[in-house]
Image 1 (spheres, one colour):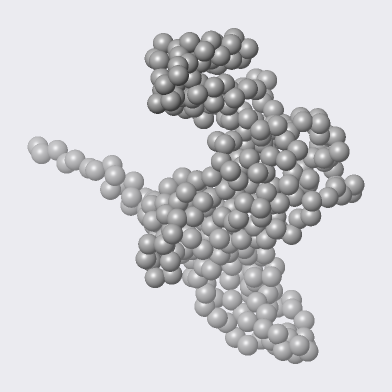
Image 2 (cartoon, helix red, strand yellow; image 1 turned 180 degrees about the vertical axis):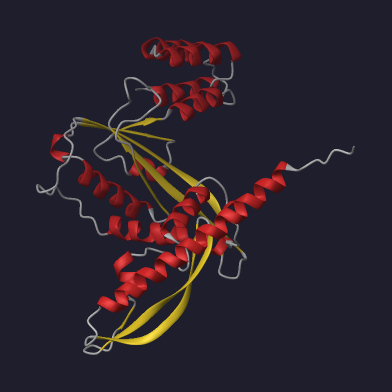
Length: 330
């Protein structure tokens, strides 16, 4: 007797599709039932029924098409959808709030096109990369506007943290851009700042009270944004030290007023590799730095710089080591 084989993937897809369709149908019934109840209990003298209109919302389990009443306010002439007002439906275009969150999470890890393809596959519907872009902007634009409206001043009515030591990290990431015609445009730098007040004792890799700030804008505007956000989080009068880590870029150093600037770990190690030619000396200096033996490291660099010093202007080993000595000072 011939055995019949079944593909589990096909069974899984069949069940998934059936469940999504059932969920969409149930959602439609619930929404239309609520809309009907609102139609019965409304102020009929104030809100004149103008019939029902069809609309669609894309959810995490597919598209839901339903009909809801549209009303005209007899006093103001305003068009009102009672269902939308009572449900507090938050959607981006035709995307539900939950689906928007999933798109934003996906877009934070992969490109818009990859995010649209991924969410389309798991939600059983077609979501374009443009829809992903709109979802991201629906959340990002209000946040950017809110940050831009902040003032760099302390508000005693707000509860803020009292810290004597604050850490800041700043960097820039250059990304390729497109114009409105999808043609290659000039690259833009995304400026990123991280604010925190130390590391978790139980997990040294975890930052305490971490806040991220990112924007594509001139350095001065970005620094004003960072300072405004900082003033909303901490009582600035209580801050005694601000340690700024960065790669040494001009715009980062220019923003270091009132802070102690230092190269971050990655760029310190890269500077050692770039400025110390001797492999053994480079390895020894790196080991001392990783061990936290900064005084010994600086002394080692000084001895190395003196040992390779010559009168030959073409030999820059001593000069580079001296530069390295300056860079490494904590």
